[in-house]
Image 1 (cartoon, rainbow, N blue to C red):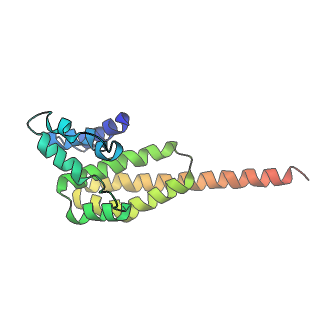
Image 2 (cartoon, rainbow, N blue to C red):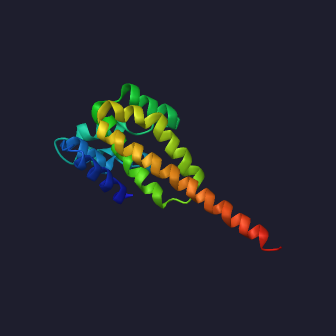
Length: 163
């Protein structure tokens, strides 16, 4: 889990986002979703910016009962600039990680979700991030196609083994 947060922070720095609240939020942005019983007062007591970090983390956290589509639409339509930047950096990190996933249905769904919901957010905040996302989407689509092609070829070989 922690490695992903560092990746998200590194992406922000790569794109010259050096706002301390944004960078701190990138380290703890998944904590409320991943640890439902987390005592948010611990987060609020870290330093003088803790309240702003906590508010940003809450902004990029799915509300219980909120669908993924509703969540991403909420960020696109009502999110602060920092929430949008953080969501796009997080998605870039996640798309990079998809290169290590072998569940093609998930990779395909996540990739198409990126096109539908994250591209519009990225277009609002940083066109260079859009370019990286487009490259990642193209790469993941190729990854799925190559995986499916290989699976099909293996099935064809298996079916001729009995001849």
